[in-house]
Image 1 (cartoon, rainbow, N blue to C red):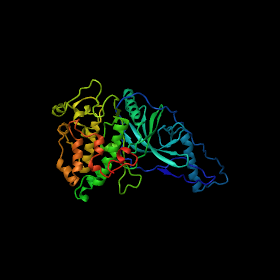
Image 2: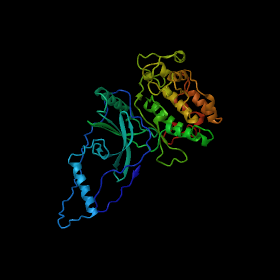
Image 3: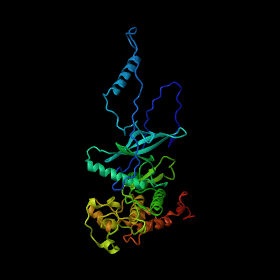
Length: 431
């Protein structure tokens, strides 16, 4: 979003503070959970430049009764002097109004969202042509209050791993990382500002409005198809172009940018949170990835074994985990788990419900292991469209060898007429 600066009359005092902009940036996962080597750029610690304005001292011996305006200005000047005399604490480098960047090119704005391991705030910068650009910055302090030194080191390692993957991703439907500044105080990740919520927010609102929509809990069919197609395009880019598995595909990690005119066609989906993502090994196939020495489970083992599971052993989010993901207790370097989670999202967009969910986690695991979900609810939501039913069935296939790949997903008849002008792999599929 670019805003032209206001003209300031010559000789008028300029206030360089940033005016806050309201943003419905509803959801951003602050934590990343993997380890990696350091890959962050170092930047010098921002230096605060104090305001040099001082109140003038003027004799009032000939004016014993100052005007109300004079009294107000005098009290204001006194408060300014007190602020520089040490009575107020020195602002932190991540406080609103502070500068970050190699050349202090970004000014920190108001807070967008808090998390357990950091905060997301707006940042403002002025471009070459004098236009103001508003972005977001994810801030993770080196010493988080209430955390031990070991925990703080782990958080930094996890963030560094996320950045080591995220920095290479450039796609319309992936939240872009513009810059990373590593200081002694904190790590600052500058990214696009998302004006809107997430797919989770959209489904929640649709459920709340079900009575006004003839009982329909899911999104309008056109919007459900549009967002599913955009997510599939992002996954195709990750799996086939960059060779990355995301590992945490879920409604909450699909941002929907509504900053442009989205009244008819909906917003632009942006996949985020690459804390669990990793590159696929170059000597392994797209859908047969596992760490060296890991146990390969056959389809029979995957579906018939009753796994010993605790919530801490799940990598990602339980309701989106695949049967294979629940059957092993290590990271799977494969794309099939992302496709399974994609099927969960398509089901949720259409029906307004997650296919595998129970108040008892053990029951949720049982439903996932058997791929047992309400087919009739999907059939009713699909309004006779067998294409989306077949798509979900192909994604939620227990046998990894029979499960659809993301390329096959994009060739589903349900996506006929959908296209991305900037993606040659989807441009001509349904022309």
